[in-house]
Length: 512
Ligand SMILES: NC(=O)C1=CN([C@@H]2O[C@H](COP(=O)(O)OP(=O)(O)OC[C@H]3O[C@@H](n4cnc5c(N)ncnc54)[C@H](O)[C@@H]3O)[C@@H](O)[C@H]2O)[C@@H](O)CC1
Ligand SMILES: Nc1ncnc2c1ncn2[C@@H]1O[C@H](COP(=O)(O)OP(=O)(O)O)[C@@H](O)[C@H]1O
Ligand SMILES: [K+]
Image: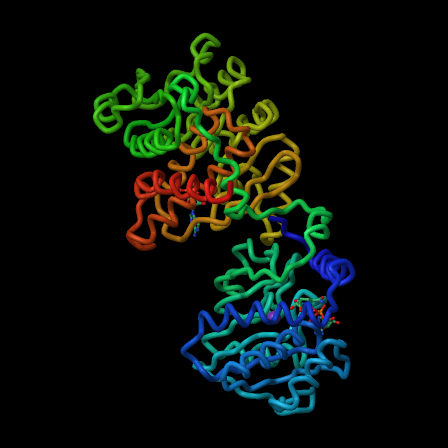
């Protein structure tokens, strides 16, 4: 699913109006109806609501929502906030349509500000994607007053928040409990810095013209379920372990074998034909008893010491995963060097201490040599170290992410809520699955195992990264229903991979 800019949203709206064709007032009616259906499903037991409408089309939506909710028996109070006399045409028409049912409370710069209370349920239809400057004056005052309420449902986007550019820390913005956006997600929704404003967000379809969406060019995508399920490869009846790939996982060290085991178990649960775990020899019994399905390749030392791999040793592997539970030790750079040299055609994913080693001055010299489409999976701190710099805000972080991925022609999965997968072509794909229960030690190791398995099965690296991240989050979303965000541990993700695969295959069947 595309994530488009505020300008493109306007263009898509216009194209829909001209080519469907549908009048703009009817498109507004459709948008407000979609919002209201969602609202009535989720707030069926409350009766009194306050709707705050601005002067443009977001405000127009609010006026239609007021009319619809009134017709369903809600007690509706409507505030129209008019910083100037200028209003949009569709606002005017809908104010007229509402006037016989409800009288609005009009607030201009000379009016006394309304008071809102903690228990009020507010609908925020002040400004939408047409916002072109930070809120000030009356608009800012009203938002501050509205933020007293505990429950605010934003129409399309919280008022005061820009759709696709940075707000400064001082900007006054609605703190919504929920945001109901029209059809396409906004870039602002993907960024941690905006979490307090957006709350939980949901999309409602308003029938925008598919051609207009197809024609909009963008670097940003949202991996929604409909797309993600297309990535899962069908398995042939005649497949055997030889056709499903042989993964080599180089992971673990003295005191950190848990990471290796988590990664190996996830790899095996993600469809790999065979797995060899290369780890310190002391872990042999642990690995053999905990993961009987894995082959064990022993390293002579407590920490990784086998740094030289020959072409002959590597040639039987169809993917290599490297990093979980290693250590920051220059030997790891020699290892990466050796793999690049002798196994450059084998798909590679580098995580955790593998990335930390690339962040050293000598490691950075290796970045240029990473084979094209190597996958790295840093969390933000690891990414900062890798860049050797920080960022001012999340938009800058995305620019740095894209630059890095394009410059080194590698795939970067920047982990977190809505993990961003940056591809060498400059595109960034945000994930739709996952939850805060996954913010627990070892979740990242599980992801490495999953992606290694997909690479071994010859998923193209971009698909392995995007789909692996999706699958990992889906397993988390299934796990959380039973374990809660508080009690979840990384193994719960692996334990729920089978259900995640079942869910995806069922959806594939439904859609075929
Ligand atoms: N036909 C359409 O274009 C549709 C638009 N829809 C709604 O329309 C919204 C966009 O509407 P508009 O483009 O009218 O814009 P808004 O309603 O977001 O803003 C209204 C106007 O306020 C002014 N403004 C911007 N920033 C301001 C600020 N900081 N202080 C004071 N005034 C400011 C601008 O001149 C802007 O045109 C969407 O978010 C969505 O809710 C939906 O009804 C779907 C259909
Ligand atoms: N709030 C969250 N919402 C969704 N996913 C999350 C959240 N927090 C963490 N995750 C996911 O959990 C994983 C954590 O990985 P990482 O930080 O490397 O942990 P570790 O090193 O302990 O394994 C990542 O895949 C990340 O995307
Ligand atoms: K709004």
